[in-house]
Image (cartoon, rainbow, N blue to C red):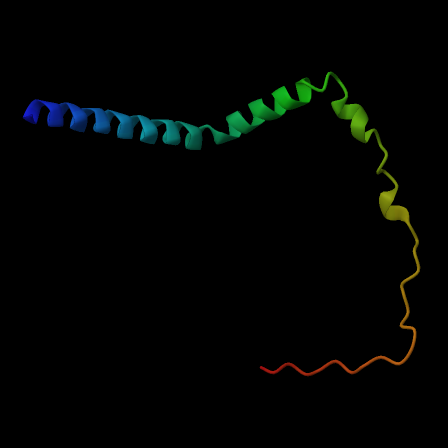
Length: 82
């Protein structure tokens, strides 16, 4: 019975070390993993990645919209209760 318990304890330790090791690897290499995923995702678009934006938003901030004015008398702003 003791041998079975020892085998289970060793297996548990191995699994725990594997989880900690993989977590550490991911933490240390997270930037390269993210970049790799981005490259694969953009590569799967087949060259459409740059054409999707394609300068469509270049002049988006150049709108000269009028600022809305209140329609009538406004209510006073209450003071802070603090």
